[in-house]
Length: 201
Image 1 (tube, helix red, strand yellow):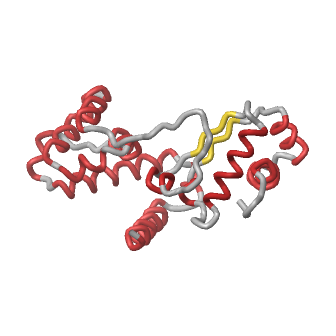
Image 2 (cartoon, helix red, strand yellow):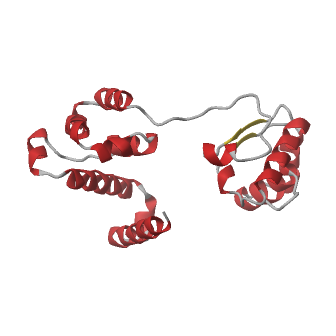
Image 3 (cartoon, one colour):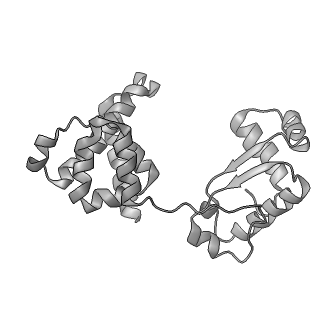
């Protein structure tokens, strides 16, 4: 979003028209009639010098189009650092899952995850990763094919690697992108991307 640009203008020109090919006339009508449900992720990813302007623009939009439902996501420490806050009706703070919640979720997911539950008992790194709902979902979706009998012969690092490899294989089977790219190429790109991301941490 450009500095000082109104949210309504940004929605019509950038988001609706450019991204979703909605005509500007229809986009303006939807905004005026307050027919949109806005899910705006990544406030913390907005340039730090423009973040306050972005919050101000969102507040102005809410005052003008008060019946439009809107959700804005941000990492908590970045949001708390702002001098201006969103004037929304409610704030929800998502906290990491507890070990008890993780175990309960996996137990309810079915008997095929018994080996993963067992691995969680001794793998502190896996416990930490599973506190994220996304990673827990990855763990539960992965058809890891590990029996409890195999656990003693596998290191915690091997178990983690097996889970993520199994998840990637399952996702590759589901995605139409496989028509254009080989699994080997996709895995190579994912590996390169992961290394780049680790280098930025």
